[in-house]
Structure formats: C-alpha cells, structure tokens
Image (cartoon, rainbow, N blue to C red; front, side):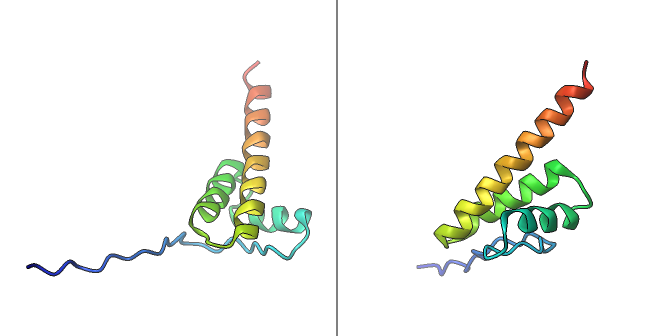
Length: 83
C-alpha cells in the first residue's frame, strides 16, 4: 500500500491584515484597509479568506461581517461611477 504525502492544511494569506478580533469595529476595519493600501475588494477578499479558514467562531463571525461591509462599500462605489 502506498503512503500518501501529507498535504499542507493551512492557508497562507501572504500579508498580515493587522486585524485583531479584540479591537473595536472601526479599528479592525481601518487596519485591514490600510494593510491592502485602500483597495476595498482586496480587503474584503482577505477578510473572507480569514473567515473561511479560522476555527474560532468569534473571529469567523467578525471577519465575515467586516468582509461584507467592504463588499458593500465596493459595490456602492462602483455603482456610482457607472452613471
């Protein structure tokens, strides 16, 4: 019987968000946006990735809420620009 290679089970996001679940909502969002140089879509995607891989319920819930906030901002900003 062949042995299976062990796969890396951890997701590597590449760059830290500076996001901490114990910070206030405004501080978390400001730090996350700053880490992605103001790119709303990149920030939302990074937070959603964090939400999907974490096993801590509180972190998952807060990261997902922040990601949805940035997705909504991105959508609102792009909708205004298309008129």
